[in-house]
Image 1 (tube, rainbow, N blue to C red):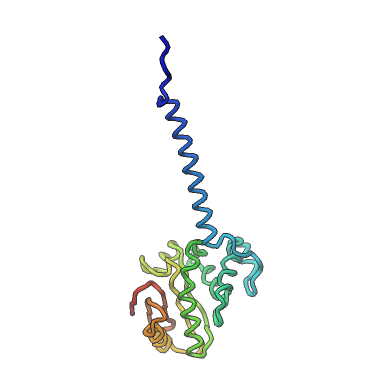
Image 2 (cartoon, rainbow, N blue to C red; image 1 turned 60 degrees about the vertical axis):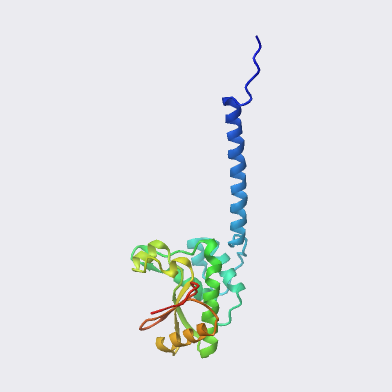
Length: 202
């Protein structure tokens, strides 16, 4: 007696699982491609003024991609060199890193605040001491476990000839006019500014 084949037997199920796995992997790769594109994968790798070739040798073409992203913000008082420099710091044997690509755009609002502060005070930026910190580097410098530096939303800054007291006052004044929502922290020799989305002071 001839028996009809079971179309839902083990072989058919295995084939279906393979098909779904391939389909899922394809969809996942498409989604990742879109995310990478949005996150800066296709930013230019053209040389940027002031960016040392040694930095590129250390960390690859993402140095140039990130530098070109910063250049594209068209800031008047902040250069790509200033922004990238803190990412090459080390504490002991622990080296900092560039932020992940998907975090690149997070720093733009904070840099625009710093840029506005420099224009308001008519004082050049002396140094951006800390911006993004990798988790390992953040631990090495004893940063807070929920630091906005881990999210690439914070900048520790000094301005030439302006005290940290005055800088923090200017930052809070700009914030009070609705230019940003975030944290302003005054330290003895620098000021912390971040755009976390709600106000905080220390």
